[in-house]
Each structure stands twice: as structure tokens, then as C-alpha cells.
Amino acid sequence: MQHMTNEERLSLAAKLDKELDDFIDGLQKRPYTEGWPEDRWQEEMEKHPFFMKKSPEAGEEVSPLMEGLQQLKYDPNENTPEELANAYKDDGNFNFKHAKYRLAIIAYTEGLKVKCNNADIDSLLYNNRAAANYFLKNYRSSLRDCEWALRLKPNYRKATIRAAKCCLEVKQFSKGIEYCDVLLSENRNSEMLQLRQTILNEKKKAEKNLRKMCKLEEKKKASDEKLMKGDLMPLVPELSNCMVHLNGAKLVWPVIFTYPEYRIMDFIQEFEEDDLFCEHLNRVFEESPAWDIERKYNVANLRVYFENQSSGKLYLINTDTKLRDVLKRNEFIVEAGTPSFVILVRDSPAEVSFLELYKNKIK
Image 1: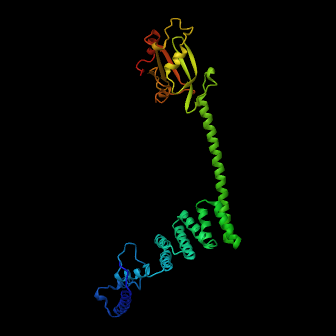
Image 2: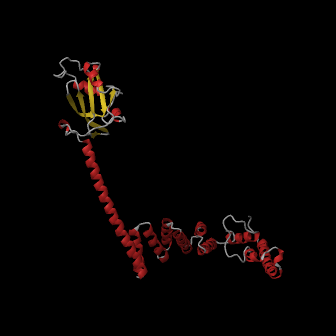
Image 3: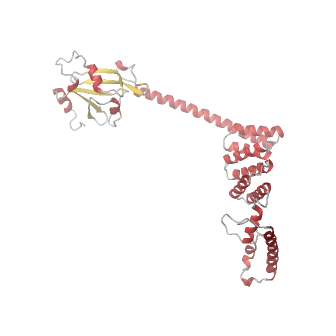
């Protein structure tokens, strides 16, 4: 809509006066048979701007008369920034009194957007918006508006009281007590003393619950660590001091190689997760052990297996596999913190005999 000239405003004012007179005269003379049922008489009258008891809803169609009045009220060319801010404040107050808190928030926000640079008006708009947010249980938004109001007007008692109540709701107890102390330093009254005591009681209760939660968390952590250490503690005496540990960003494991043919085993105290099996086998058999009388245990002839204790299945792995790749397999279960593997000579009678124990269970 274009801005109205002085002549247009005078014309509109005259039109409003005439319409009001005609409307009142019509109420006195017009029979209800002309289309206004008696039960709708008040409803129709309230459509006229001068008799409205509530503002139009958002998006509701308004009459040209109402549209003209709104322009006069909110036209920045016809009103100073302070007048505009006050107009929006009045609208917000109207909606607030009718419990339309969201509409009130919109009006107060529009008033703040005007930026009238009047601390009294702006602090009032912030305080009123804080009240509307409080009734909507938007406590954090309410507290934020209270703080803005107090920046503009530090001794604003209403804003300080509401800020303390918001702090109780959002569990910012220390700040709430500070607000209460400011109020009590100015005027000691039972209401503020009671509010301070309530906040203090809630603060003590929250601190007690926090201490209890911390103790439970520490107890659970200690229990978990104990269980973990128990699960990862090697049962073999030779590896009792060789638990899994980190070397930089890599895990280092104690590992067992078992040789069913001779019923003996080797203990690898440090097997880094990125190491290949063939690397450690080469070290073990760099020199033939005394029990390998036939000198048949050389890395090229060896096969490596692991057993899943739950399913009883046996799995073959390549000697050029990394330990980490085996540990990641769903079938592999670490017992007592020590990965264990079976070493056999390829196609040897000992391997054939051993595999007979796992008929139909070899993968």
C-alpha cells in the first residue's frame, strides 16, 4: 500500500466519522429481517474497527477501513521510532492480556526491530517478551530477554525477579541465587527470601545427585576395568607379565603357537597387530628347534589354523596375513587376552590326523 497524503488522511477520517454515524443509525433503524439474524447482531457489529474486542488473526482478511487504520498506526513516515515501538508494545500487551502469548511475542519483537534507541522502551519490550516466553515455558528464551532488559536497565526489578525464576527452571542455580541477592539487597521481603531458599534447596539437591552419579560412574568404571583386566589377563605363566598394550597407535598382543604333533607351544610375547604370521614364524624357526628332529618345520611348509571354541570349527589362514585381519573376523574369539593358533606341517600325517578331529568343521 502506498503512503497516504494529508488530503487522503483527512478524507479517510471524514469517511470513518460518516461510516460510524451511518453504522449507529443503521443499528437503530434497520430491522433484523434485512439479513442480520438477531443471534448474529453482536458478531456483525464487532467486525467494525471501532467495536472490535480483539485484533484480527494472522492472515485474516481485514476491511479497507481497518487496513487504513493499520497504515496510520504503523507507517514509519507518519510515526517516530518511539511511537512505532510503543504501538507494537501496546499490541503485544493487548494479546498478552488475552493469553495470546505467541502473538504478543511477535508484536514485541517487531517493536524491538524498530530500534528506537530508547532504553526505557526497549527494556520494557524485552521484559514483556520475557513474560510471554515464560508463560509458554520457553524459560531459556525468557532468561535471555531478561538479561537484555537488565543490560539496558540494570535496576529493573521485574526483569530481575523473572530472571531468578527462569534460572530455577533451567537449573542455573548459582546465577539465580545471585539475582535473588541483588533483589534482597534492595528490599528484603518474604517472597524473595522464599525464592532464594527454593533455588538453594534445588542447588543442594542437584549437587547431591551429581556426587551420587559420579560415585556410581567411578564404581562402574572400576568394575569394568577389573572385568576387562580379568578377560585380558593371560592364563599361561610364561605370559603373565605380557598383557595386550599399545605401542603408539598399534596394539601389541601376547600370542601362542601350539604344535599338536609334539604337544608343545611357543610364546610370542610381543606380536604387533600389523605383523605378518610368516614374520614371527621365520624368527621362531630361524634355527631348527631340538624337537624338530626331521627338520620339516620350515615356514614354506607350514599351515596356520585357529579354532572357534563356541562352534568347534577350525579355520585356515594364510601365513602372509596380518594379526589385525584375523582379530577382526567374527569367528575369532580371544581367550584370556591371548590369541592362540595351531601350527602344522602341510599334508603331514600329523595334519591329517589332527583334521580328522574336525570333520565337516573346517573352513
